[in-house]
Image (cartoon, rainbow, N blue to C red):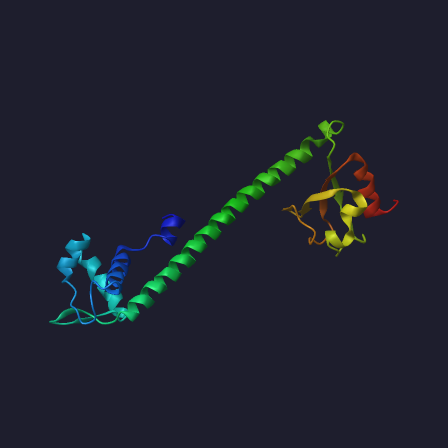
Length: 211
């Protein structure tokens, strides 16, 4: 079953229960009225008697109707109809929001994969186009003892000192894409940065000093 069908589509008996509750609210039925028998409701909604039975149980549990043996199904409350419909409206909203969030995570994952592929491609082919490309990718390792360790990209003023932009950080087996100004430098990081050719020397001096 798809995420969409799990999150959005209601069981038939719930739809019928909601429809009956709506009909009570708009005045098709009044408190004290008797609903049609299960066989009549089954025919009206074109479903099995078992489906109607489950719908009536749901309405009974919500104190909207009362099933009285020998008397049938009696309308009990309009106010509870409103609470019932509001409850399922909230559930629908939460389920729909959940689906949208899951969809966004899937899109994010695909986008990150595509960006990673492009960064890898950019890095792999950079040496072939070093003389024709105004923005060259550089890789620098953050060694133990460097002054940037523990600082964020923003705190270190990386761009101001190097005129280069960090587009990724390789950390172990992971690639952090577009890390942003709040990313913290850690020992062992491999920085992927782009900038003009002169930025290479600026980054080298910024990280390692005059070594």
